[in-house]
Length: 278
View 1 (cartoon, one colour):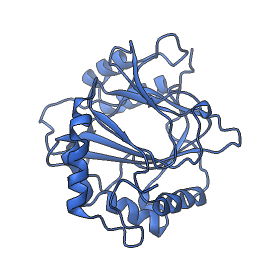
View 2 (view 1 turned 45 degrees about the vertical axis):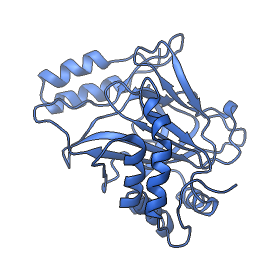
View 3 (view 1 turned 90 degrees about the vertical axis):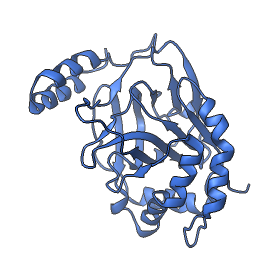
């Protein structure tokens, strides 16, 4: 099946005019979604591109999980700067002007800025029994002093089925309803606007029958709209109703962050993160 996005698998160049047109074609649907704006596109990149990136991601092997807590289990990431040459070039292309213009046309957000540091982004790998509870993301790029506005996820999992876990879920802020869910199938792109209450995650543990990890490309985009004096938000987790998801420590962390030195906040956050699900 023909890919959606005009991306040359050999030169990794993007046809700028066509990219903008495709972004505009998604704008009405994207910007009409609630409780926040999002979309999903299948067969997004050429098959050759997505296959090579998957192969190189698997070549990186495994490594100790990061940010292990009751809310996040057996997930790790690889910075694109440490990836093999082809994958690194793909990430650079997805941070280029034509791709930014595609995102701006689709989202209606002007002045998007890619992250050259890939903070939190790159290749994400979640192993068997791994999950990421429903959450709203951190909202401030400290190094560049920017506001986080968009997430792009492109999945790298051939023949993945819903029963294998790891589906990407979108929830209302009050956690009363799961609004949408996307199985992380090969070459599916999900994009969504980020904010203080954009609750999302992949809380169902990965359970591939052959032990395959859940792999994805993750990229974040920002704008120069961060206001002086605004208090940054760290990742905020919330429980799904009727689940055994970890209890949220959102209120505690917000109080600690506002009134104590940064080192005390970090220690408190780490302590709460080590608590088991109960």
